[in-house]
Amino acid sequence: MLDPMKVTEYANALYRTHGDAAEVEAAQRERQHTDAGEPDQAADWRRIRATIRERRGALQS
Image (cartoon, rainbow, N blue to C red; front, side, top):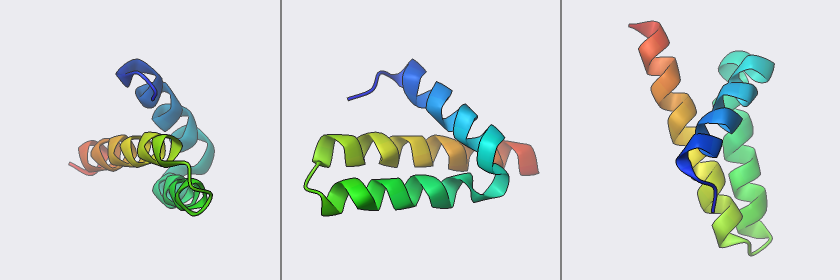
């Protein structure tokens, strides 16, 4: 499992790279790991996705 600082770093990098599509990208990666039977990695991507969602909400305020 990624520590909270790494989750934030990954979320920020994904958002810089993909913009508003970053949350979709994180969801796809989460699904890939879920389908591959990798629950820890899927949980990391779920946390990254949630961080992106929080960031987008803050930017829209």
